[in-house]
Image (cartoon, rainbow, N blue to C red; front, side):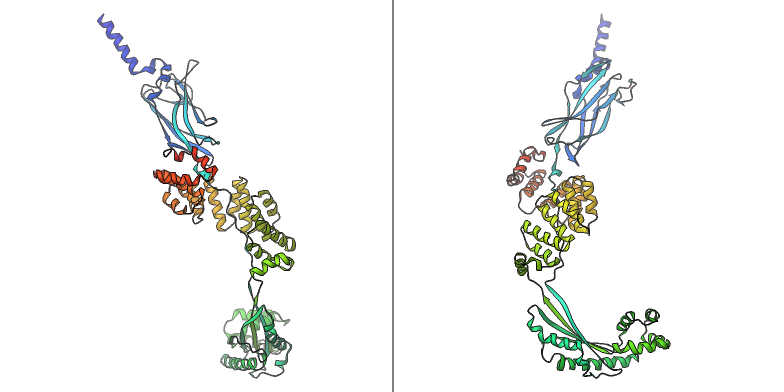
Length: 549
């Protein structure tokens, strides 16, 4: 009797120590003995996916050597559930090709991936486990909760795109010149009266006399440049150019400026040997050996060597002395003029009264002065119709995008021939708004504009490349930059950027304060953000605020 009692007691102890060995069904009743870990502890949506690394640890003597366990990961959320890929586990004596869990225990780790769908902002990840043994399915008593979630903060990114108008080249002041010249005889600095009666000198004098009547033009200075031809000794040519400068200045004051009496600065300059003028005249001449002469000028920099080599070509030099050199013994009179273009006010008036009078640059500039998008578009239409302006097409597309007319903008951009950085940034924004992120990235990469870099930062956020996003968005001052810092865990930098009042910035600041455990500050910012109905609704299920509700 005593032996029988000891035998029964031993069997009872064995059953207590290894409850699963005798009956695999017991595993379904002992789920609490397993331990589960998840990284991250709070599920997060990244680039439209929820990724979780889940580890399940089985204690010793838990997993029956002849059992199979089917593990079904499931995300349960408001509105439904999404099944993950089934994981199959088996005991050591099972001959299937599943993951083996030893009888003395072990840990199984797997990466789980789910597609995000709206509603998963308030969800939980659980494992539904079933024991398979001898054709029977024995579900665990309850699902094993793994983690809560999911954090969708990255979805606060604005995908409207950073836009910029192509610039105009309108000049409020246009620099002009009026020029005349007189010629001297060889080795002479005397101004001949015949030279002062030449047609271009007469035109110059008349221009100076009439300039005061032109309301838009004014002479702001005069340059007198005196030259010597490059034949002869350099030091003698320098002195000759100085004498010609003095005589030219006297001629200007006594004759050319006699009637106008312009009180403007006069700058005198001398060029002892006019090799540049010589080269230009030769290049534009019909001299038979001009290519040989030009090669000599390229080969030698020393003036004396140049002159010697050219004089050695005796037949050519005779032609040069007759046709070229006399034109270099001269003085030039250059009036520097400022033309006052239409003012901004005049341009705005002309748009209403006489838009046909404006050229392409004036139209583009006037459009930049206008705030109303429809008026801008009308001005761009004029530039397109009259000048087929590609910049006007790009800018019209930008204005349409500001009106959220994405398809119309795409149609306008399809007709742009001259594609530059402004075009590529704009067409990239069209693709971004259409959700064609790969196309958008390709277009932005072709532009060197700061705005294109910002837009690449938006794509970085959408693709889960948060470090790259912070780099590309740095300096933007937009809420996307603050968001990038939050996603990288740089909370203080995020607060530094979120320094102006608007609901989106307040919402981001609320996230920062919630993460820092500053409950009152977080609630105050949430209240400010709630002026935006969409943000107020989002906050109700945002897991960022789970600890401050």
